[in-house]
Image (cartoon, rainbow, N blue to C red; front, side, top):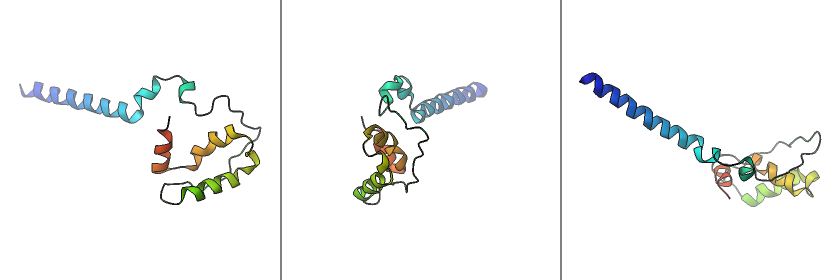
Length: 104
């Protein structure tokens, strides 16, 4: 009987790990169409576009300063709101990025 208990324990642990992995991988997002999760649909990335280097915002400094720095560094595309929005997430990290990615 001890063998069955161990198999049951392993099966239970595997199921728990599977559930944890699905939660970590965002199983729900996989059920959505790419257009549902796309921040800016039909964005036109300019030919030979290179995103400037940014100090990533972590959520512990002034957000207004970060926005000012972002806009100034990408000011060449200031009139292209789709590009500005599309690449903004690349200027974030940590809690700030997590917050931003959870916005509708």
